[in-house]
Image (cartoon, rainbow, N blue to C red):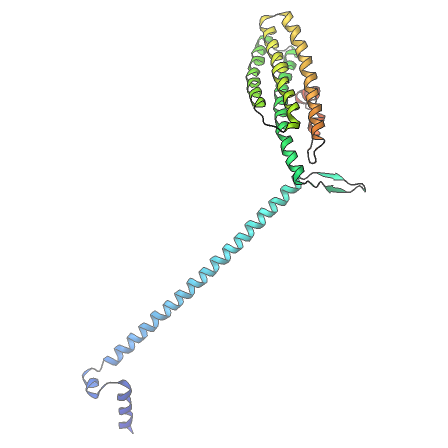
Length: 258
């Protein structure tokens, strides 16, 4: 029985009895090599699994980041929409958003071009009004204020060039011409005469300046009324500030904070 087992072992080992006699350590070496190969293969498999896991995690994180970014953008869009949307009261007293068509939006943008230039003119006028207030208060030497009127003429020149170059729709051509006329013939002349009358102590020029100031006031009020009339025809345009503004209220607000 022992002999049979030895023969079976030798047959399955594919080695002759002479090989076993001459190389008794070959079997153990091969077993060690096999173990090392198995270990290396196992490490490769584990490394591959780890790499796959990391790739899945990265894809998941990118997917979640995309969702978070898209959600944030959408939320910002909703918040922005709440702030810029105009609301009105319905017949039954409920508040409802104003629905603007593509045509309304286009008309509003066209109007904004003219409105922006009007506000630039108003800004210049407000600076002149503050100089008038300081001069009328009598607490400063008029000769120190005269150059300030002259300095505003630089803004007049720049505003005149930009207004003249303004491209507007046909229905806004008239209001553009009114703005340009006010800049060149009213506020520019007024500032020049105010500066000259103070510097030269010329009563005649001073009288002309007072006439210019009244004309500047009247014509700007006329421009404002036309701006309001045009804006009232367009859905979505907020003219509250334009309608409420007056030279007197502006000065009072700047001086008294009211």
